[in-house]
Amino acid sequence: MRDILQEKQKLNRIFQDISNSCKNCNQCCFTYGWLLPSEIENYDSVVDINDCVYCLDSFEKNSQGERILEKIPRCKYYGKNECQIHKMKPFDCVLYPVKVLYNTKSKSFLAVLSLDCPYIESLSITRRKALLKKLEQYFDKMDFNLRQEYFEMVKQWALITEPKNFRYSIIKEFNSNG
Ligand code: SF4
Ligand code: SF4
Image (tube, rainbow, N blue to C red; front, side):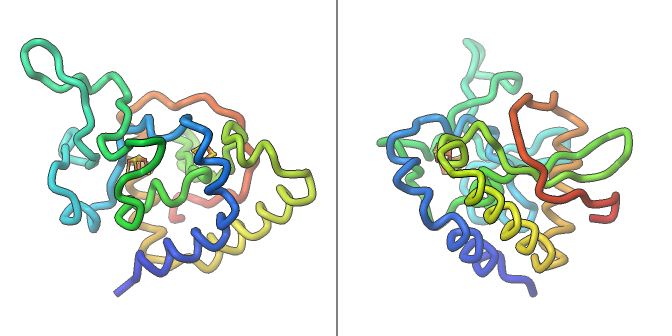
C-alpha cells in the first residue's frame, strides 16, 4: 500500500524554503482542487465532474443555486493568506509549483516547474537547475502506483478542461504509461 503522506513529506523537504515567499504572495489556490480517487474520503464536500474526476466543492453558485463549473474558484480552504488545512492538502496542492501536463495528441505527460510562481522566479539559475534535478529524481523514485493514479487524474482533467497558459521549465517527459 503506497503512502501518500511519505510522498508529501518528500515534496515538503524539496520545497522547504518556499513558505516565506507564500506568506506575501496571494497568487495560489485559484483552482478546482483536483483530488485523487484515493483522497476523496478525506474531504466532506467533493464534486464529481462527468463521472471521471473529483474536486473540492469551492464553486460559486448562480441565482438558481447551480454550481458555476466554468469559473475556476478560489479554494474554500484558503483563508488569512494561506491554506487552512495544511496537513490535509490534496497531493495536487503539495506538488505545486510542479504541474503535470497531458498532451492529448502524443498521449504523453510532461512534468514541469511553473515559472509563474514568485518563489521559483526568485531563485538564481544555479538554484533553479539544482531544484529541477531534485524534482527529476523525485519523479524517478516516486511511488509507481501513486504516479499512475496521479497521471490518470491529470489525463482525465485534461480531457474536460482548457489548458492553462503559463511559463514553465521542463522537469521530465513520460510516455503514455507514465
Ligand atoms: S505562487 Fe508560489 S510563492 Fe505564491 S503562494 Fe503559490 S507556491 Fe507560494
Ligand atoms: S487545499 Fe489548501 S493548498 Fe489546496 S487549493 Fe485549497 S487552500 Fe490551496
